[in-house]
Image (cartoon, rainbow, N blue to C red):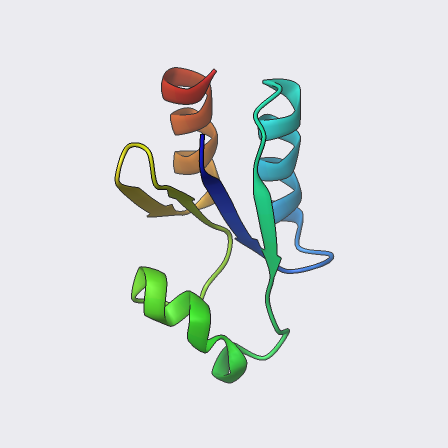
Length: 79
């Protein structure tokens, strides 16, 4: 499984997604992003936006944002 989570240290929404992935024992890689939106070019490249969290599931061809949507996806699809 190839899951990547773009996250910002100290972001409560990112922590919610981390917790959901950990609770469901899902292996993933975290890419830590810069605090300044203008510096988040990699997130923009992969998702079209600079906000985090962003989850990329290469196995299913899914890229998504918004912590609530990501948590639902984790629980319904990946768990």
